[in-house]
Image 1 (tube, helix red, strand yellow):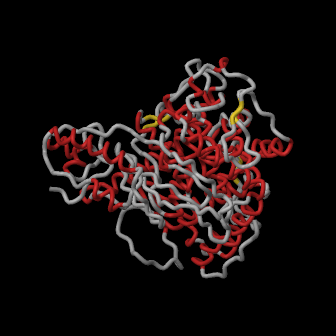
Image 2 (cartoon, rainbow, N blue to C red):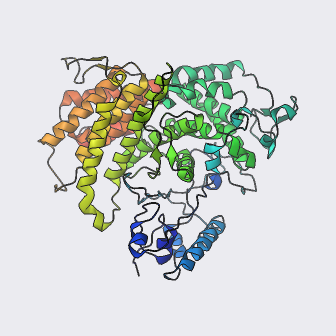
Image 3 (spheres, one colour):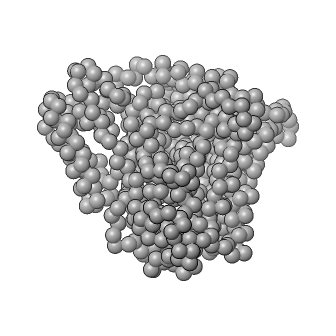
Length: 589
């Protein structure tokens, strides 16, 4: 009998309580013993994502590790019927999830995932906390929290007539199943006990007030590119503003994000409270499974969440990141994702992947991403003579680099490897290195910098200019992937080392770090690249020994918070502590 049980592997290994390498369609353990290798059907729902406020974190799986271990206490029988009992066991697990109490103390998530070279399936676990009523963001939950929304249908559902269901309003449960022309134009719906000023659902576009229009315009001019940084078609910039008049949840999400960026705290908090109240109600509706705008609202709320943390502490509860994780887990039904992001659903997917990389790097843990997903079609397979096809192709190449980086980060931070696979780690490292270098070699010429100047006396970092956000962000992701692979290259190393003298590998890492900082300095309005500086500094920051370089790194971070409200004081203090210099006082936001 095996000592450990696989929680995300096939049902056969889970019933037998043995490790599963999670290779699909037949894992190694089942193939070796010629056993039937059966897998659990996807069943991801939004039922565990119940936002109360910015400081609450929802568990993506439910139950503590001890409770989950207790679920696996089944007999070790080696026959086909045991797999059928495994199906019953899993169904029983789902039925009992709602009644369990959750651990309210944050804990570090321990993920066991494949590094992306195998088709392992990712499990999700996140801390759980509850916001008390005195919080200004507290919204009373509805008494009934049943009827979770299938995110798989959010990603895959389309209007039969070819129109996105998100353009249609919701009046009551199941209303989106009716034809648009059958809805009375005067009908509106605002649920009881909603915060004052909450926009109502309506069959007709609801005009924006002057103040709301200013904030939506600010989002369009400045913030949409945060989400579209690898999307040449700019779906969040061009598509979201036209939907806000139809979808109150999305409207209030945009208003809260834009108001927070404009430092209008009271307006931002009021819009956020209204958005959460509507979001809770919508997640309880079956019709919400047709509404892609919910996904957009949640990834936008994640940015609001990141801007709303204290700059001196950087404390981030990741509430909406946990909600966004349902997007990834729900994709297990088809196991393919289009890197060209032809729909708003897929654009939201890539926003989530990038948001995961930020927290994964800072916490130095594997990203909460399902690496059994495959990119299809690959950028190299795309051929289209239409002039606008270039936008689709460039989006695909940018997201290909994003995916390569995610696989690299997962490889570097995934310490829960099977003992018999450690010997293959150097080979897997080389495969990832070759993958990253192949992207650099094969990418379109348009991704090259239009100018790359030398370092001068005024700056420690070179001027590197690009023509588009997705070009410079991909450049940053390429250099970040190289930094990670150089830093975590398998081989013997000292646990503690003297950084007063740099090794050749350290100099290589710093060369890539200077490229990221130079590109960020040259494109200060490309916020996602400044975000990349913020979290990659936890990898390369201690290697910066030159006082002039240190000062310019701090300047990049300081200007980022000053211009875009992104909390960086805590990052500056953390890296200064590594350098052994005095910390920076917290700046008001």
